[in-house]
Length: 366
Image 1 (cartoon, rainbow, N blue to C red):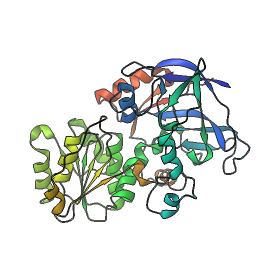
Image 2: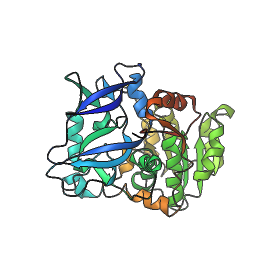
Image 3: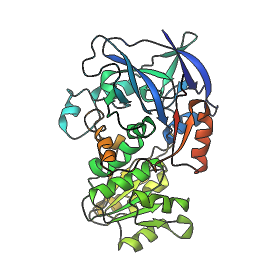
């Protein structure tokens, strides 16, 4: 067993505390990754607060990381010690029917992991679960080879980690789920880390109008560097009416990036009759449901769900860093705060306050 530092949540609503956990060494097709940076996500916060908590407590949260391969099991063939990687909550085996379909990133191995999650962490002989099978708020993690994507070495870890969730989810939703086309109009409900990446995904797709909706007025200006053209403040009137007015009757695509069932319904209503598409990205509290009036769909609208932007983790996600290197994707403005791992509770507080876009915690040098 390896002894590793990790920030652990022991119960819903409790702050994260530093623990020294036992970590099983890599076996077979597994790799040991030293986590150099980890972005904080609202779904991590939902697990911590017990609002959407699919993993049992105690738990190591974190699923948006970047690091270095430090050891490989004997059956690993595509990664080597020293590789820079992004660990993946949704792996890519490359051989199952979904992986080969070209239509989805829902690898059969990922679906099996959801049904029977495995953790490699323990404390005093008792298992400690890892969020999405990763738990990147630890100094080291062990994952299967198919759950680690090799990335280019010239992008700093605090930026590279963001492609593991926020960037892949947002950009991918626009390009691979909704298939936004050149000249179309888009509305994005919620301009946090996910929403801002939907904005730049829509920009990459060639959308000519990208409308952002957020309760924080500062988000309107912050989002313009990502490609936003118009901003709607719900405090100034019904958001759907404002979107319809700006877009001439409704947008081609609307994206819900908050995880609020009411906003999901609004996003659908804001789409254009006959061809509008609403894509749901936000994760709502456990048990919450989205109410849809059937006639809304009969008018030619559709609703889609998207998980990690429908991007295949190993074959597609690393390419996002190529777009960054080509100055086509904005990452520098996305990461507004860099904190040590020990300050992770402060990082989540910044997230809740709305004062930060993407907060990244980093490993302190040994």
